[in-house]
Image (cartoon, rainbow, N blue to C red):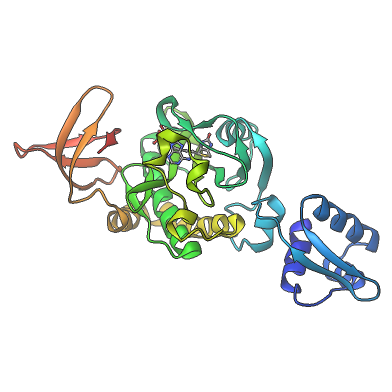
Length: 321
Ligand code: BT5
């Protein structure tokens, strides 16, 4: 309901809207309107209130709260159920718990700050407050577990296109899960699943995107390899809610098309957006290091490396340089 109120206030922010109009528009009592307005104020929204004229929204805090995302999101399913937390250990952990408790497909868990954001293989994801987007999506695709890696690539496509749509920045994908701007990492994806031997119960897609960080927000070790949308766009400050809404909209299109038509379209688009393909790279897997020419990805999202001796190596999981 507060999302709808916010939507109305955003639409009418050039003028005043009376309590009566709001109450009629949303089908709630004047007292309920007043309570929601107070709640918005507590959350950092500023509203001018003038007797007999009504309310006017004058300031929106740049938080990707459930209210704010709901006010602008136009998807049918992805992100329709939103859990927002000011602070969590990791949105992945919370989303896993919710998935075990029957949370529906498309549920979005988003936090302003993660105390212990997770990367792959137990690595850390730096998630300071007030700057980026740290979120996890719960999906329930009817696919066998071995196809789940396709969703990492689908997610990379949706995030890259969403960044382009919201910020006008041409980001690129580095296999399997990095999104780069000018060669530096601006987003990372962590795909995990809950599954039975032959059936996926839930896929939890974790996405971390650096949005408004300035160089001083990054720890020393990350400075040379990480960037944010703001750094890439002359320190412009982006609305975090708008960026997430753009990504979720691209996500919904790609995901439901994938469930109907399969992976091929995703694969093609992924290869267009990928920086990796056609380059000489070094892939470090858990057991070995392989050098070769990155030729493309297979139907399963496996990277194909052509080695010097002409042999094609299938890379399932690795860090590449
Ligand atoms: C990833 O892992 O890139 C997956 C990151 C997923 C984070 C999201 S946030 C929401 C959800 N909840 C979670 O707890 N996690 C997910 P990986 O490919 O292993 O990359 C991790 C490496 O990226 C680290 O070892 C650092 O070198 C680097 N890194 C850490 N934080 C970064 C940041 N904010 N920006 C750029 N690089 C970062």
